[in-house]
Length: 106
Image (tube, rainbow, N blue to C red; front, side, top):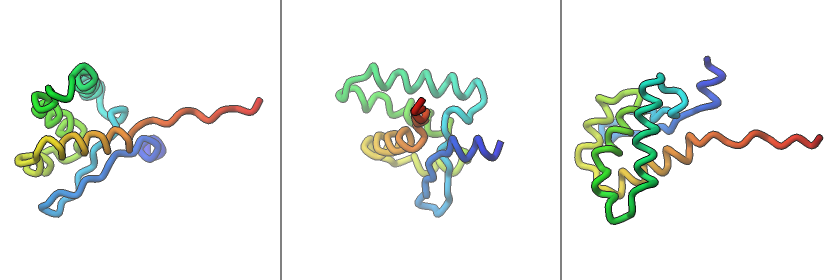
């Protein structure tokens, strides 16, 4: 389990209250959480930039879903502007993206 957790690491987020929240890789979520996260992420690809602000509640839900301490994160998210949500999700996706398998020379 420790090896898997290290391989599928999350993104650490420092709250203004001084707490550290881990935004976990969706692959480390239980089945229900994984399904919910994938459904929310699928909607991001369907939405144009002009509609992005309508996704704030779903982005908030996604971040709370992947957070190891949703209570600490919820207080942090209360007054975030859209740009902070978008940037945080982008950094989280980049950090938790599963890399490709190394190519074999044979």
